[in-house]
Length: 130
Image 1: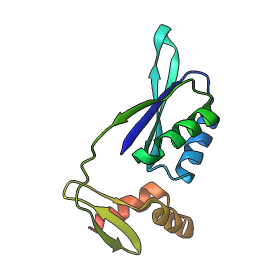
Image 2: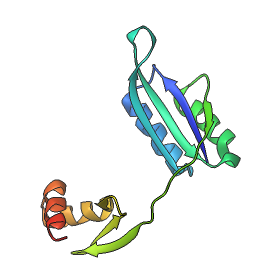
Image 3: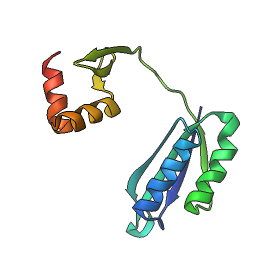
């Protein structure tokens, strides 16, 4: 896997959100942005995209097209993936490792919409059932 990264100081939050969505829909394994402070104290976003080596050029070009960046950095990296277990609690899918657990967002959101209970409150109630 490859990590692609570019620093952006002239993009709106809406444009960045659109770029992330487009990259994920195009098959990126992950895409997200970090906020930072750049040279001369200027606010910046750092856009990161994870993809396989064979598609790095394609995603670099997509990052430039979507954001106007002048260049993309490329880093090889390794990822430690922990064994996951899946289960359902009151009809909501839960993913867990030896270190943590979380409910699948889309299922939690659907149950929240159906019951009228806030997402946070529903997650708390389901965790108490553990």
